[in-house]
Length: 216
Image (cartoon, rainbow, N blue to C red; front, side):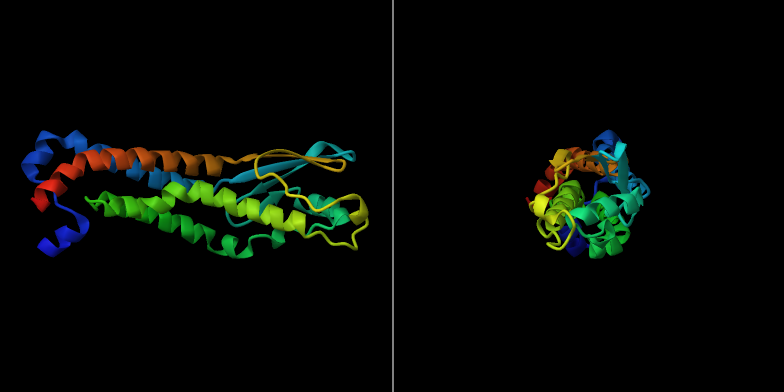
C-alpha cells in the first residue's frame, strides 16, 4: 500500500475529506468535464476553410473532422488541380487513422489524473493540455507541405509560386481567397485544455499539503 501511495500520491483521510470536501471535488469536477468535452469533440468538425474564387462568389467550404473531410471537397480539389495542389484527402492519412483513438486516450489520461494525487497528475494531463496546439501545428505542416510542393505540369503552374496557406485567418493566392477558422470540435478541445489547466492549479492546492506531509 505504501508503495502504491508513493506512486499515485497520498489518499485523503476521511476526516479531512469531510472537513474540506469542496477542495477535493473542484479538481475532480474540472478533470471530468475536460474529459467529457474531449469525447464530445470527436463528433464535431475541428477546422473549417472557405475558398472564394471568381466562379464561386458564394464560396466553397470544407470542414475537417478528426478523421475525415466534408463539404465541397471535390470542387475545391478541382480548383486546386489547376495550380498543382494535391487532393485534400491525401493529407494527414496517418493522423486521421489514429485520431479518434488518440483523443479517447487523452480523455482517459485526464480521468486517470483524478486518482493521482501528486505531480504525476500533471504529466498525465499534459497531452490534453497541449492537444489544440499540436492539432493546429500538424494542420499547418500539411498545408505548407501541399502549398510548397505544387505540380510543375499543372495548367496554372507558371502563374502561381509555391506558398504557405494559413491555418487560421485570411489567405490570398492568385484569384483565390481563403478564410480558415476553428470548428466547434477544436473550440471544445481548447475549452478542455483550459479546464485541465485550472484543474491542475486546484489539484496542486488540494494535494500538495498531503504530499508534503507524506514526505515529512
